[in-house]
Image (cartoon, rainbow, N blue to C red):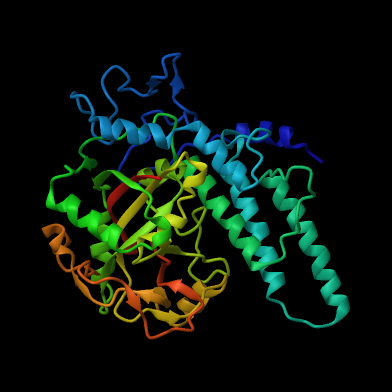
Length: 413
């Protein structure tokens, strides 16, 4: 049986060049695939490894002018290796023993496969004691193989058997973050054409800030809005229009999405992803989808800012949810499959609190005309579902073509 090191040698080290399909480019060299931090000098200055090293930090357009400080700071926090280590360690990943640069997409794919096996065994309901014992042993074996593919560290505790939906969901989140990190090339760059910082005096900035502030609870009021960027990822506008034109019940909303800061190198390069690795997911048991919210506090929870120095990044996206998404009161590992069988392309998880009125998002910017957003002149209020398990509404999409990233908001807690 080959050791892990031997297997790596046969695989050529597991380094894989990211495949950029849309906007922000990860650099010209296909051989540089392992995401590494920019080198810091003794004075703490960051040096970008790219063909534009002697010019400025640029993205899918090489610009001669100096990048704006806000864009430079954005890239700096995305590539902060301390944030990355703290984040992954908080999720029990063995960062010191096996940094993400040594993890391959095949490892992530293998880990996802094992999680699927465990999920299938959870949903098999044979009641005989013998069958239950057999499945318990299988879950232990699958868990061991999962941890072999995706190394964990539990600080003097044995590796837990993955035997519940919550544990599977936790590991799916880890795989998604690792996948975004693998998508971030060594010399990922940001251009002023693709990510435009808004002036704090612009109506566009003020309206977005108002939407942000109006849609959170008291627990998340202790933040400062550092910057708001208008994002233009290549191909996304055309992609969502094509999706909408093929669906007669089109209806889009301007919704929040939160991910940890280190994920944004991959997100800005490749967009949001339905699954940790690219494969057909439409009817799969673990079709977790991409989650959005009409309350910013929901998305802020997903940023894990406690692991990233209080830094948080939120996306504000145009999301095609449809005129009549599948309505539910809770989600599970099977929600995507159930939604697909219902001939729907999104799920609406009802909560106890939410917007009471919606308006046209053209109030923010004319380019958003036709997209609905909560009316910020009204406070969120109780819905007609006081017994819903969730505090707030959630929206889940299962096709990346339903999403058009519009803005990126940088917060400091």
